[in-house]
Image (tube, rainbow, N blue to C red; front, side, top):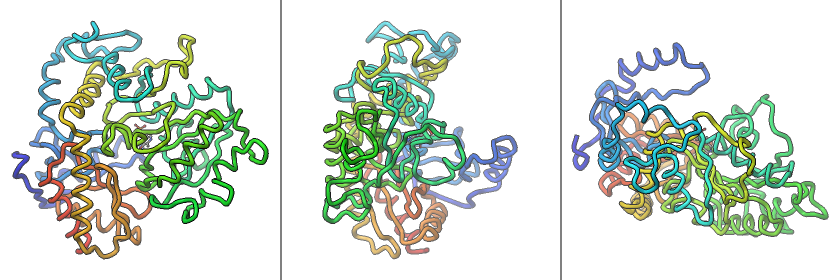
Amino acid sequence: MERDTTEPCVEDLPGERARAQVAYHHATAAPSTYVYEFVWDYTAPADGPFCTDIDGNVLLDFTSHVGAAPLGYNNPDLRSRLAAFDLVDPLKIAGQDFYAASGPPGDAPIPGAADLMDRLTEVTDGMDTVFLSNSGAEAVENAIKICYDHTSGEYAVTFHGAFHGRTLGALSLNRSKSVYRREFPEISGVHDVPFCTDRSCDATTCGCGFFTDDGSQLRRMLDPETGFVPPEETAYVVVEPVQGEGGYRFPSDAFASELAEVVETHDLLLVADEIQSGMGRTGEFWASDHYPFDPDVVAAGKGLRVGATIASENVFPDETSRLSSTWGGGDVLACAQGALTIDVIREQNLLDNARERGAQFHETMADETLPGVVDVRGRGLMLAVEFDTEARRDDTMAAALERGLLTLGCGHKTLRILPPLDATAREIELGCSLLGEAVRAV
Ligand SMILES: Cc1ncc(COP(=O)(O)O)c(C=O)c1O
């Protein structure tokens, strides 16, 4: 497969083999787990955003595995670095449990957990300490645990539309679809306020209900005199700098400034959930880097291949075993992949590329006349198209897939587009053209 010339080519999707594979998967998978009908053939050619499914269809994948594969398929740089790792040695795949594997610092043949943590502190301003875990939800769990521990507070604030994962602690912070939370027990004391729905609003034009005559609902809720959540008993405010599952919602400057001001006024810990928006997706390493608020704790995952809770050392508990995990940080291979992914993003200036290709997407879509499209938004390569109805969004995703373009839904009427961070101009043009065709066909 030649990345520079490949075009998507779909015969039948889902094809016979994909349908059989999905049925086989469902035979043992918990019934409520969602499985895409696209079945990637990892033995077949794949390069950048192009992959082949098990029926031989060639697809342009603009989902990057929900952001978990920021470098797309078979990134040559990542592959050649990982190939240097001889997986045959069982010590190298034994995992790292409680061992500080893979040293000595700086000249380990393959980067391990310590290297990954070191890289993460390099890309995260003012933070010097990391706890590794197995998933995004665990990164959030540990983020809020350290905040409860650090402050002894019993209250917390989250935002309407939020999604932070599916473990019990993390789901208590969720305010997106009811399916995630309904009837599950929750941690108490979590209050919510509206999240910005209009990225260009200010306090006077805001339509989401966040702003009020006397400031904002957040400010009002935490007012020591008249509010109902005592700031000195509040452990944290948790925010997705850009809401993912909730509909790719980008906060306005006014919203971001008000959040920054309120957490500063009350000296509250701010947790940024960067699991979807981080790792360069928006053209900065963390999406928070675009905004005036400074998180005290960052939760990351997906493209890292492990979960990571990042903060200053003083926010973490000192007591041994207060935080721990047998498989925290996965195995050496997972840590290596996370660390090398960060290296490739930095060495290949993929933040710049994400910004440039994102701008290209906007310019190209602005030239299209797209019936039923009510908004095209995004930062870097965290992109979204919102439709007038859910049905039109769903039909457009299906029509795009028929043309070989893989996309994802989010929110209720929005389609998300996450090309790999090294997407080329040709690939963005191709994706826009297939998307435009799909919209018009619907
Ligand atoms: C913003 C956000 N937080 C948390 C999670 C949970 O991550 P994981 O699925 O790795 O547990 C996700 C997953 O999509 C996410 O988008």
